Image (tube, rainbow, N blue to C red):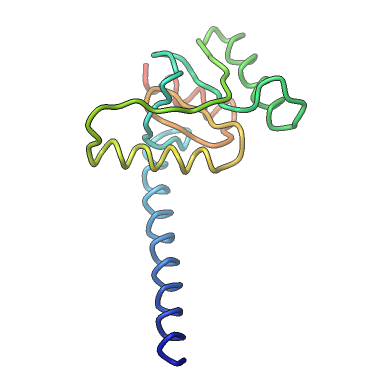
Length: 139
């Protein structure tokens, strides 16, 4: 019984440490962008040069309305934007970098809605200012 307890504590400790390391890596990556975006695999549906906003379409939820408002404001500012409700990836041979980018995209998708993708970068629930900073940085 003691051995099982030690193994269980070690497993929980390892999982906590791994999550801590992952969060530190994401925080370091986010500091490289003025808006806190991190490098990700872009969704297949995202047109090049557009801001892709991912949230439920035609939904009355607060999150979906926030995504619609963000898209409308970006459109008013002349920034190409596309709203969508799905995320898929297509790539050939999975490289280490492609797998890391896909894992970071998964992290974004698990965060608060909307998920926003701009030129190979992504962030959960960014402000308009965050999106503008990242869009302009990439131009």
